[in-house]
Image (cartoon, rainbow, N blue to C red; front, side, top):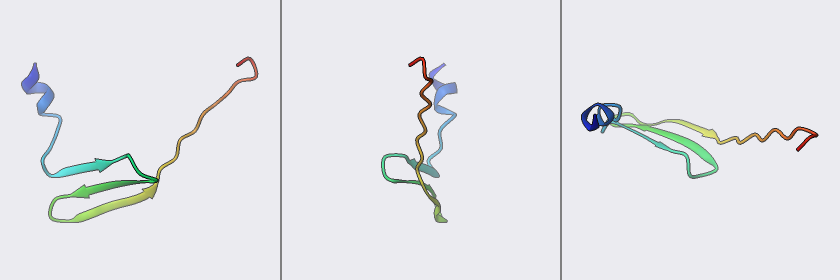
Length: 47
């Protein structure tokens, strides 16, 4: 099972969600996406 789980990841791609912008880096290409991160929270009147 661990081998199957590890197969979902790649050494050629990294994603940074910890800043004001979401960055996606591809090995050999550099940063291919640099967009503002957005978080939306829906609050119903009932709470």
